[in-house]
Amino acid sequence: TVSQGIDFRFEEIRSIVYTISNGKYRLERPEKLTRNFRSHNGILSVSNLVLNRLHAAFPAAASKLPPDKGLVLGPRPGLIMMEYSEISTIIHENSRIRILVRDELKDSIKAQLGHAGNACLGIRDAKGLEFRDVIILDFFLGIDKLHNKAWKDILLGDSAKKAKISTSFLDLPVSMELELKLLYTAITRSCDRLFFIETQKSQAFDAWRRCLKKDELAIEIKSDMIGDRGVMTADDWLIEGIEIASQVSDSEGSEAKKLLLQAIDHFQKAQNKIYEQRCHANLRALEVLDDAAPSISATANEREFNRKGSKVVSAYLDAGLVNDATRYLRNNCSNPGLEKFLRREILNLGEADPARN
Image 1 (tube, one colour):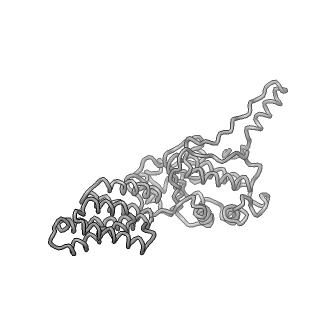
Image 2: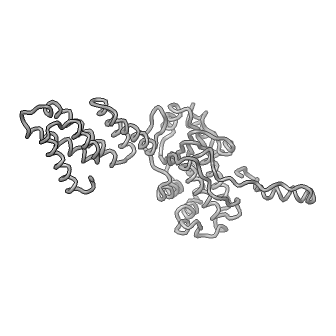
Image 3: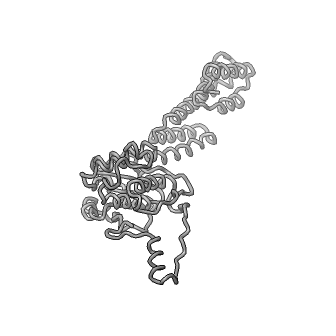
């Protein structure tokens, strides 16, 4: 439980009922469910990490169960440093977001957020509730500075990699058991997207950020990755960019170029250089193709046909789009000599760079 001053588990309730009734009544053992229908794996991977650390540091704190699994992968949580004014803008643009904070800091943070403070809840207040998008705000800033070393040891200590804390749990502040439970509760309120936002730097948040990034459980996002749909993580931009790029093959001319430019913008925000380069190469192929189109149908200058056709094929191959290069040959090369020449070019390019094959 995350209620202050209360600490019990279901097994203890079963024992109490059995004892009070002199063995007349017995509560059935609960079924242990591991399939989570609320949160996806992007969120559950982080909550499971918190539970692992809790069990390692405080073995008697909670019953150890198999890790939760979601129905889908889902986007990884985002990590970001922001000011309160920027957070207010997010809330204004995305009314689905709820902000979870330490209960003792709720009033002061709501005052800082102004009207956006209406979306702010204490973590204990939010227990049992669920929200589509969640911001966990200044959780690590609220940690007692004297406990920073303990957090660093739990999250980054060498033995933490083996799910065992290097120091005995007796050496850790007792309050950290409740702190870990609070963090777990806050994380598991989210159904779709989760963000850890801090308004100031702290050693504890730095340790948390490094811990999540080390295992690729979360990604850092930038404040400019905010729009009328709310915050988009790098995974969101990547997925949407792929969807846009997949429509290019069904489009022509200016519409195909427009889609490619949109996809490039998405891949830049996702910081995915490979897909960005492929879109750029595909765009060059389309531009060369447009320039070559009037000449390809001509018959006066075969050398010019070869030069422009070679540029188109080479651009497609640079993008790794062998099928597009082949389709170009099939649809645009009515001249047998040109087709033979370009097919030879494809073979030569493939031998020079096997990665293109």
